[in-house]
Figure 1 (cartoon, rainbow, N blue to C red):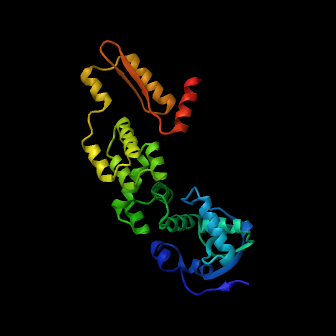
Figure 2: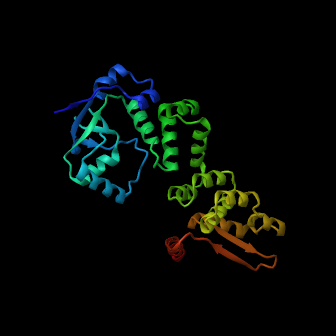
Figure 3: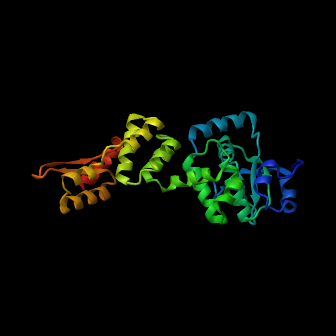
Length: 289
Protein backbone atom coordinates (compact mmCIF):
# COMPACT_ATOMS: atom_id res chain seq x y z
CA UNK A 1 0.00 0.00 0.00
CA UNK A 2 1.33 3.42 -0.90
CA UNK A 3 2.41 5.59 2.00
CA UNK A 4 1.18 9.18 1.97
CA UNK A 5 3.37 12.12 2.86
CA UNK A 6 2.29 15.72 2.97
CA UNK A 7 4.31 18.57 1.56
CA UNK A 8 5.22 20.18 -1.74
CA UNK A 9 8.29 20.27 -3.84
CA UNK A 10 10.32 21.28 -0.85
CA UNK A 11 12.74 24.10 -0.34
CA UNK A 12 15.50 22.76 -2.61
CA UNK A 13 14.10 21.95 -6.05
CA UNK A 14 11.13 24.29 -5.63
CA UNK A 15 13.42 27.30 -5.37
CA UNK A 16 15.89 26.04 -7.97
CA UNK A 17 13.24 25.19 -10.58
CA UNK A 18 10.59 27.92 -10.30
CA UNK A 19 9.30 27.24 -13.83
CA UNK A 20 7.82 23.86 -12.92
CA UNK A 21 4.02 23.85 -12.70
CA UNK A 22 3.48 23.08 -9.01
CA UNK A 23 -0.17 22.16 -9.53
CA UNK A 24 0.88 19.50 -12.04
CA UNK A 25 3.69 18.12 -9.95
CA UNK A 26 2.12 18.29 -6.48
CA UNK A 27 -0.03 15.12 -6.53
CA UNK A 28 2.93 12.94 -7.59
CA UNK A 29 5.37 14.58 -5.18
CA UNK A 30 3.22 13.81 -2.16
CA UNK A 31 3.33 10.07 -2.78
CA UNK A 32 6.00 7.69 -1.57
CA UNK A 33 5.38 4.24 -2.98
CA UNK A 34 7.21 0.95 -3.31
CA UNK A 35 8.42 0.52 -6.88
CA UNK A 36 9.67 -2.80 -8.32
CA UNK A 37 13.44 -2.56 -8.72
CA UNK A 38 13.29 -4.35 -12.08
CA UNK A 39 10.93 -1.71 -13.49
CA UNK A 40 13.38 1.13 -12.88
CA UNK A 41 15.59 2.32 -15.74
CA UNK A 42 18.75 4.37 -15.39
CA UNK A 43 18.86 8.13 -15.67
CA UNK A 44 20.38 9.23 -19.03
CA UNK A 45 21.27 12.61 -17.50
CA UNK A 46 23.20 11.17 -14.55
CA UNK A 47 26.43 13.23 -14.27
CA UNK A 48 28.27 10.43 -12.46
CA UNK A 49 29.44 7.85 -15.00
CA UNK A 50 31.41 5.59 -12.67
CA UNK A 51 30.39 4.18 -9.28
CA UNK A 52 33.02 2.87 -6.89
CA UNK A 53 32.37 -0.84 -6.35
CA UNK A 54 33.55 -0.92 -2.72
CA UNK A 55 31.32 2.01 -1.75
CA UNK A 56 28.34 0.37 -3.47
CA UNK A 57 28.96 -2.88 -1.60
CA UNK A 58 29.12 -1.02 1.71
CA UNK A 59 25.85 0.74 0.90
CA UNK A 60 24.28 -2.58 -0.13
CA UNK A 61 25.29 -4.09 3.23
CA UNK A 62 23.73 -1.13 5.04
CA UNK A 63 20.52 -1.54 3.03
CA UNK A 64 20.36 -5.26 3.94
CA UNK A 65 20.44 -4.28 7.61
CA UNK A 66 18.55 -0.99 7.69
CA UNK A 67 16.64 -0.87 4.42
CA UNK A 68 16.54 2.18 2.12
CA UNK A 69 16.24 5.14 4.50
CA UNK A 70 15.96 7.91 1.89
CA UNK A 71 13.58 7.18 -1.02
CA UNK A 72 14.84 7.56 -4.57
CA UNK A 73 13.08 9.90 -7.02
CA UNK A 74 11.55 8.62 -10.26
CA UNK A 75 9.01 9.52 -12.90
CA UNK A 76 6.51 7.14 -14.44
CA UNK A 77 7.05 6.31 -18.12
CA UNK A 78 4.32 5.55 -20.70
CA UNK A 79 5.46 1.91 -20.93
CA UNK A 80 4.84 1.34 -17.21
CA UNK A 81 8.50 1.55 -16.18
CA UNK A 82 10.03 4.24 -13.99
CA UNK A 83 12.95 6.47 -14.95
CA UNK A 84 15.37 7.58 -12.27
CA UNK A 85 15.63 11.26 -11.48
CA UNK A 86 17.87 10.93 -8.41
CA UNK A 87 19.22 8.09 -6.29
CA UNK A 88 21.08 5.87 -8.75
CA UNK A 89 23.58 4.71 -6.08
CA UNK A 90 20.72 3.62 -3.80
CA UNK A 91 19.03 1.84 -6.71
CA UNK A 92 22.21 0.01 -7.73
CA UNK A 93 23.00 -0.91 -4.12
CA UNK A 94 19.42 -2.16 -3.63
CA UNK A 95 19.89 -4.46 -6.60
CA UNK A 96 23.10 -5.78 -5.04
CA UNK A 97 21.28 -6.24 -1.73
CA UNK A 98 18.64 -8.39 -3.45
CA UNK A 99 15.67 -6.06 -2.88
CA UNK A 100 12.66 -6.56 -5.12
CA UNK A 101 11.09 -3.18 -4.28
CA UNK A 102 12.45 0.22 -3.28
CA UNK A 103 10.68 3.25 -1.76
CA UNK A 104 10.45 6.11 -4.24
CA UNK A 105 8.97 9.55 -4.77
CA UNK A 106 7.00 9.41 -8.03
CA UNK A 107 7.05 12.78 -9.74
CA UNK A 108 5.34 14.05 -12.86
CA UNK A 109 7.81 15.86 -15.10
CA UNK A 110 8.41 16.58 -18.76
CA UNK A 111 11.69 15.59 -20.40
CA UNK A 112 13.16 19.07 -19.87
CA UNK A 113 11.93 19.29 -16.27
CA UNK A 114 13.23 15.80 -15.54
CA UNK A 115 16.63 16.63 -17.01
CA UNK A 116 16.88 19.85 -15.00
CA UNK A 117 15.84 18.12 -11.76
CA UNK A 118 18.26 15.25 -12.30
CA UNK A 119 21.24 17.39 -13.22
CA UNK A 120 20.65 20.10 -10.62
CA UNK A 121 20.03 17.63 -7.81
CA UNK A 122 23.12 15.60 -8.71
CA UNK A 123 25.30 18.70 -9.06
CA UNK A 124 24.63 19.48 -5.39
CA UNK A 125 26.38 16.23 -4.38
CA UNK A 126 29.62 16.89 -2.51
CA UNK A 127 31.34 13.78 -3.93
CA UNK A 128 30.83 14.64 -7.58
CA UNK A 129 34.13 15.13 -9.41
CA UNK A 130 35.06 18.49 -10.93
CA UNK A 131 34.93 17.18 -14.52
CA UNK A 132 31.56 15.50 -13.84
CA UNK A 133 30.21 18.83 -12.53
CA UNK A 134 31.62 20.66 -15.54
CA UNK A 135 30.01 18.19 -17.95
CA UNK A 136 26.67 18.52 -16.13
CA UNK A 137 26.89 22.32 -16.36
CA UNK A 138 27.60 22.13 -20.09
CA UNK A 139 24.72 19.71 -20.62
CA UNK A 140 22.31 22.02 -18.78
CA UNK A 141 23.48 24.98 -20.87
CA UNK A 142 23.21 23.14 -24.17
CA UNK A 143 20.07 21.07 -23.60
CA UNK A 144 18.07 23.75 -21.75
CA UNK A 145 19.55 26.68 -23.70
CA UNK A 146 20.60 28.52 -20.56
CA UNK A 147 22.99 31.45 -20.22
CA UNK A 148 25.74 31.30 -17.61
CA UNK A 149 23.72 33.78 -15.54
CA UNK A 150 20.55 31.64 -15.70
CA UNK A 151 22.50 28.50 -14.80
CA UNK A 152 24.10 30.37 -11.91
CA UNK A 153 20.65 31.14 -10.51
CA UNK A 154 19.41 27.58 -10.93
CA UNK A 155 22.31 25.87 -9.16
CA UNK A 156 22.95 28.60 -6.61
CA UNK A 157 26.57 29.22 -7.66
CA UNK A 158 28.40 32.40 -8.64
CA UNK A 159 28.71 32.97 -12.36
CA UNK A 160 32.51 32.96 -12.02
CA UNK A 161 32.30 29.50 -10.44
CA UNK A 162 30.30 28.23 -13.42
CA UNK A 163 32.85 29.71 -15.82
CA UNK A 164 35.80 28.19 -13.94
CA UNK A 165 34.24 24.72 -14.11
CA UNK A 166 33.48 25.04 -17.82
CA UNK A 167 37.08 26.11 -18.52
CA UNK A 168 38.18 22.68 -17.27
CA UNK A 169 36.62 21.13 -20.38
CA UNK A 170 39.08 23.08 -22.55
CA UNK A 171 42.06 21.42 -20.86
CA UNK A 172 43.99 18.67 -22.68
CA UNK A 173 42.50 15.21 -22.20
CA UNK A 174 45.51 14.10 -20.13
CA UNK A 175 44.96 16.96 -17.67
CA UNK A 176 41.24 16.20 -17.41
CA UNK A 177 42.07 12.56 -16.70
CA UNK A 178 44.59 13.53 -14.01
CA UNK A 179 41.94 15.71 -12.37
CA UNK A 180 39.33 12.93 -12.55
CA UNK A 181 41.80 10.49 -10.95
CA UNK A 182 42.62 13.00 -8.18
CA UNK A 183 46.26 13.23 -9.25
CA UNK A 184 45.81 17.00 -9.27
CA UNK A 185 43.23 19.27 -7.65
CA UNK A 186 40.87 21.70 -9.34
CA UNK A 187 43.12 24.53 -8.14
CA UNK A 188 46.05 22.87 -9.94
CA UNK A 189 43.91 22.53 -13.07
CA UNK A 190 42.90 26.19 -12.93
CA UNK A 191 46.55 27.20 -12.73
CA UNK A 192 47.45 24.94 -15.66
CA UNK A 193 44.58 26.38 -17.70
CA UNK A 194 46.66 29.52 -18.09
CA UNK A 195 49.38 27.62 -19.98
CA UNK A 196 48.21 27.71 -23.58
CA UNK A 197 51.18 25.98 -25.19
CA UNK A 198 50.16 22.32 -25.07
CA UNK A 199 53.68 20.89 -24.91
CA UNK A 200 54.68 23.22 -22.09
CA UNK A 201 51.36 22.52 -20.37
CA UNK A 202 51.95 18.76 -20.37
CA UNK A 203 55.56 19.15 -19.27
CA UNK A 204 54.43 21.15 -16.24
CA UNK A 205 51.59 18.68 -15.56
CA UNK A 206 54.03 15.76 -15.45
CA UNK A 207 56.33 17.71 -13.13
CA UNK A 208 53.45 18.56 -10.80
CA UNK A 209 52.36 14.92 -10.57
CA UNK A 210 55.85 13.44 -10.25
CA UNK A 211 56.96 15.92 -7.58
CA UNK A 212 53.52 16.21 -5.96
CA UNK A 213 53.79 19.99 -6.05
CA UNK A 214 51.42 22.18 -4.07
CA UNK A 215 49.19 24.68 -5.88
CA UNK A 216 51.49 27.51 -4.76
CA UNK A 217 54.56 25.71 -6.10
CA UNK A 218 52.72 24.96 -9.34
CA UNK A 219 51.84 28.62 -9.83
CA UNK A 220 55.45 29.55 -9.06
CA UNK A 221 56.70 26.98 -11.59
CA UNK A 222 54.38 28.33 -14.28
CA UNK A 223 55.41 31.92 -13.57
CA UNK A 224 59.12 31.24 -13.51
CA UNK A 225 59.32 28.38 -15.98
CA UNK A 226 62.49 28.40 -18.06
CA UNK A 227 62.20 28.65 -21.86
CA UNK A 228 60.80 25.49 -23.34
CA UNK A 229 62.83 23.12 -25.50
CA UNK A 230 61.25 24.70 -28.55
CA UNK A 231 62.36 28.21 -27.56
CA UNK A 232 65.85 26.97 -26.70
CA UNK A 233 66.09 25.41 -30.12
CA UNK A 234 65.11 28.71 -31.72
CA UNK A 235 68.08 30.36 -30.03
CA UNK A 236 70.41 27.67 -31.41
CA UNK A 237 68.60 27.43 -34.72
CA UNK A 238 65.40 25.69 -35.74
CA UNK A 239 65.28 21.91 -36.15
CA UNK A 240 65.56 20.87 -39.77
CA UNK A 241 62.23 20.27 -41.48
CA UNK A 242 62.76 16.49 -41.49
CA UNK A 243 63.32 16.39 -37.72
CA UNK A 244 60.30 18.61 -37.08
CA UNK A 245 58.14 16.35 -39.23
CA UNK A 246 59.34 13.19 -37.49
CA UNK A 247 58.79 14.75 -34.06
CA UNK A 248 55.20 15.72 -34.95
CA UNK A 249 54.43 12.32 -36.46
CA UNK A 250 55.80 10.48 -33.43
CA UNK A 251 53.76 12.63 -31.05
CA UNK A 252 50.62 11.87 -33.04
CA UNK A 253 51.39 8.18 -33.37
CA UNK A 254 52.48 7.54 -29.78
CA UNK A 255 50.12 10.04 -28.12
CA UNK A 256 52.98 11.10 -25.86
CA UNK A 257 55.48 13.92 -25.40
CA UNK A 258 58.33 13.48 -27.91
CA UNK A 259 61.39 15.73 -27.97
CA UNK A 260 64.20 15.86 -30.51
CA UNK A 261 67.35 17.79 -29.70
CA UNK A 262 70.00 18.31 -32.39
CA UNK A 263 73.28 20.15 -32.41
CA UNK A 264 74.61 22.12 -35.35
CA UNK A 265 76.82 19.15 -36.21
CA UNK A 266 73.85 16.77 -36.42
CA UNK A 267 74.36 15.00 -33.09
CA UNK A 268 71.31 14.77 -30.84
CA UNK A 269 68.83 12.82 -28.76
CA UNK A 270 65.29 11.50 -29.21
CA UNK A 271 63.26 11.46 -25.95
CA UNK A 272 59.85 9.77 -25.54
CA UNK A 273 58.04 10.40 -22.25
CA UNK A 274 55.78 7.87 -20.50
CA UNK A 275 53.60 8.17 -17.38
CA UNK A 276 53.84 4.68 -15.86
CA UNK A 277 54.74 1.07 -16.65
CA UNK A 278 51.50 0.46 -18.50
CA UNK A 279 52.07 3.54 -20.64
CA UNK A 280 55.66 2.38 -21.28
CA UNK A 281 54.43 -1.01 -22.49
CA UNK A 282 51.85 0.69 -24.71
CA UNK A 283 54.52 2.82 -26.36
CA UNK A 284 56.88 -0.14 -26.84
CA UNK A 285 54.07 -2.12 -28.48
CA UNK A 286 53.44 0.74 -30.90
CA UNK A 287 57.14 1.07 -31.71
CA UNK A 288 57.47 -2.67 -32.36
CA UNK A 289 54.68 -2.42 -34.92
